[in-house]
Image (cartoon, rainbow, N blue to C red; front, side, top):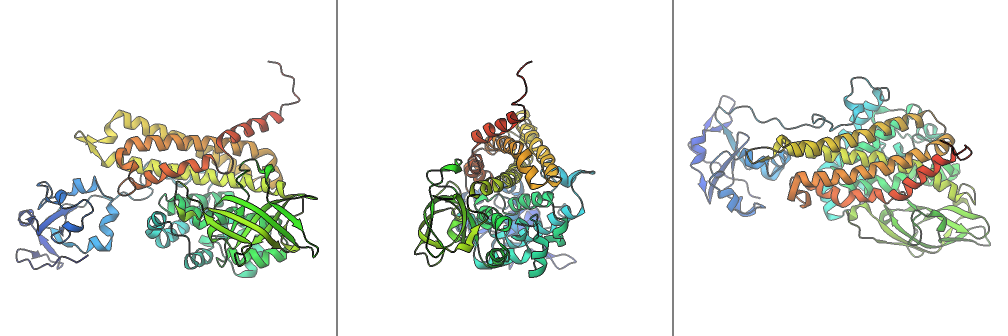
Length: 537
């Protein structure tokens, strides 16, 4: 886009050398080919930009815009960040003489309920200095390395490349996925792996993991597909290897994954078996040399398109369910093809075909026959992580809705002045905060329990909260859509975060256990505690 040329005699320079114009001078430039506009006290020359304007030339020639102060109209249609883009910033030719102070841009953390309670409470029983330090470090990294690109990646379905993987690995993002595992500290120290924000492995707890889950969702600007593509598959495919793999497997496979040199994903679901893991049909057949031959298909595998390794659940005739680490190899025996979903191909969601894939005997993860139990052990943390991510995504939508309701004017007043809008905001906020309060409490319990206790005592409550959180997301999506109107179903512009939420929030109501199964499972778990009690009122 060509920059406007400034050769204007009426412009004056102030004592700092900046070019200034009076509003009367700006008003002279109000026609096609000679078109100026004032936005937030800055003067922009749009003379050569009209044909390139996404909305066409007519809106720019409107008498209330051409040669006028179009600030209010502009911010009713565009985000403030637009003006920071290089292609638009270079259209600025000066400022308005004697202009008043610019409107304050709403910063992250300043919108009521836009941040989790642990970040704004004056006193918190859960969060300490290392949690806040971690949050600041992750947010800074994502703001610099991810957020500027994530919408493009999401829209174009761009998968993570080697460069971004290496950056994530060097930053310690993949290490955070297993920092809570036994022996992680020694492994990190041995290989020079550090965690973000200078947090040490021996002080890492589940609140640190909660912070990571929240910030990855905020850091991708609500682009669910990008978040899943960058960390989703890795976050569920790597932990079983660290939990149950041999030291040799961890050295050979896990360390390169943690460093961002390789990618891994979890291959459980099949066309025949989603939540019903017991019905897995992929088979592992023993060979005479001790290796295994794996055949079967896996479906809806997040990150599968770019994975080098697949943590795979199979069934064996003799031993029962077994978890194996399957390598992609040359693609002859393990192949992937993309699955088109309602959100972005950037998630790398794959249909994985394994045909006589050879798996060395040493690539059995854990004990033969324990595959089902190992999968279930992973599910509780996976579901907890999905709650962290999902509720933070809902909160992001609440924040966007609040900002829009305060900025958008309808019938002469801001949306937030309408009682029905305030009611919708209250309904969303109360539900999101309720979920987060229960999440904080569950996380505290996890921090003070062994993994055996977590799986025994918290599987039900985690499932119950997952059910509640996805129900809340449904309501948040509906309310936000009504608040944003047509912009909520438009992929560009002010409402793009809401539009992406419309297409993605349902994923978590299905993946990791559907809502109905989660609700039923939670009550069945509760009933086990009272099944021997007499049924009397």
